[in-house]
Length: 188
Length: 386
Image (cartoon, rainbow over all chains, first blue to last red; front, side):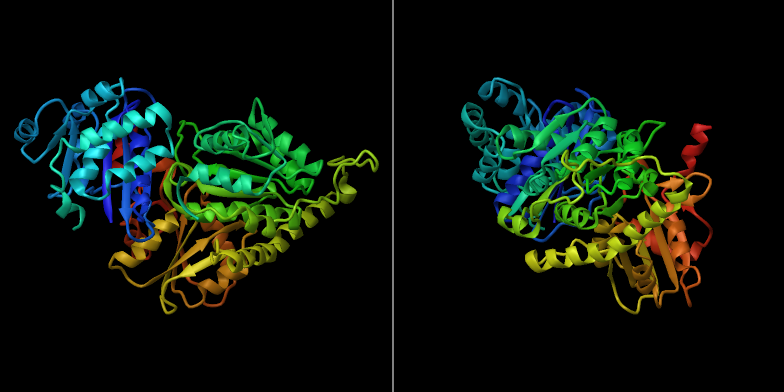
């Protein structure tokens, strides 16, 4: 079973990101589970969401304490100790940031993968919503699912121009990361 | 067909498959997504029902009371303070023997205000005369929702389907939504023999004095007790059709020769099912109590036969007494020959996370002994609060 934690701020589509990732995993024939840990439900407040992906039925319903992967939608949250808490030693961290992976890795003393997700989304969607770009990068890094699965999951929620732009965003974001770099952790 | 759906979305779909005539509800977290999804199905032309937006939960319950009395299959949903505001009407619905189905998206009750999951709300209306069924996962919640209409209409008793708020309602997971054909075969159209009819005028819920009131209470008690066999039959029939049981009155897992058992209700059961398999702990039985009303005393007693220790898990408490389920299980086992020693703890109040590691902690409770307590209390915080 693969456990993922998504950190972001209210309004960044954290819960939608968790649901989309789980639904994309479902498109590849796996079992999935995604749920939010709501705090005070307001824009800007830190929000955490959880995703589990497995070949069998998922029965545990506790929060994800030891994720294999973190998807961080707002790099400002890296300064909160709880964000990195419990991450598996070999785990991967994907951060929405205009900085480079090398810069983040040096600053935090552990491997980090950066993606300028907000800028990409601003460019392609016209809004700085980082979630879909990050999911596409995550899918490419882990090799857990093809971009198509993510597009199918999106198609259950969006259509027309919005779906087309997001599809473009998925293709663009997937090309910016080292495909398969997290494959071993994802299949451990 | 297998789908990946949010719990609330799945419940809305299950309700739609049951073709309700009237749905009335007022939004409250964490129930809101259920009625939101139902209204979306109505707006998309996928569900033909009279959807009534009301101004309070008191009205929501009153609308389904009236609709049911007029012969419509009726549904509502609520949580927490919303259930409390409905309380007077809930007693009336059961007293009038109306087969309303309601989802309780279980949530704590304030003050202090807390939107997260525990069982305080459905426990507060424990004595309202409704059947109360608890679900461990969203598949059970879907299946129980469909079964609830069958049970309600066969027994002329209202059914409350209890599903943990957020933990189930807001969790997207893989589950099976049955086909419309299958549900149509399982759940025939609602025909209410006591339906209000201007041709045969009838009054419901009228004044009953001391000369008959005891008898009405006796009949209510009898009806609830007798509903147990219907709950079992309806679940068995569902299992024959779909291959899935939603848990009957009580389901038991674990080795037959285990000396310790844990009894729990709701979504923690699902977590414990996995913990039993993946954590090294002593062999134990896990009892998932699905029917809290009617309380299946006989099934509980036979599940407890051979146990030395039973740990009863509560997700709410009665201040000044302790665990509510715990107290009831003690009563149910009193006088039983070789009854296990019963221990009672509350966990997961107001949304406190229940991790896999809670399972071995529960199995440790008999070693510590003692009376009722909140097992996952963090005593250091009490100092901060004084």
